[in-house]
Image (cartoon, rainbow, N blue to C red; front, side):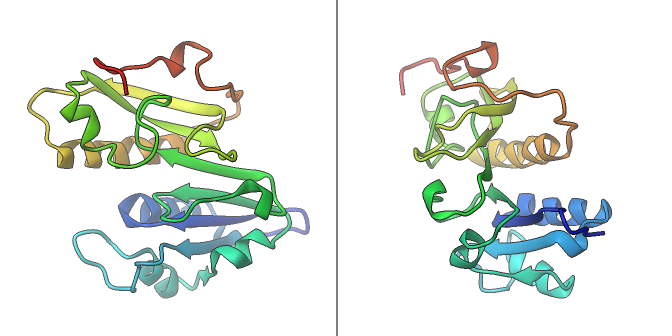
Length: 195
């Protein structure tokens, strides 16, 4: 149920992780609070990955643009493989978060399913962090690190990222305090070579 002070929750992004997050939040009873901001390439058709816009429409969840989300007060914005740069200064809300598929500060940006393998990394991870003006540079809220077997392909790593990303979203975050990247044990660089 949505009360007068309950924030709206905007899920921005694509693929299985965004759909799973949407379904999880509906199971928690937050359907009336949810909005979806799909990637620009989401045409509403599920292919090898499910379409977020298709699921949102089927479940009666409002679909909005990034501009609409930016104008909303009392909003929690959650980026899950979102394809647009999120500029905090453009938002009325300051509750902006991202799930990034790497153990930040390693591998900011794109191609995180290929780069750890190409560089011979032995570990990778998933990071929940605040969105700041940089790209994947915001303070870390939660992070998990896992082994990266030598036999894995980028596909293996990608699906593991999605699994651990959903775990970061559904975990009880009440005991987590955000810390700047480069500080604290969880922000270690897990690469075998510099990035």
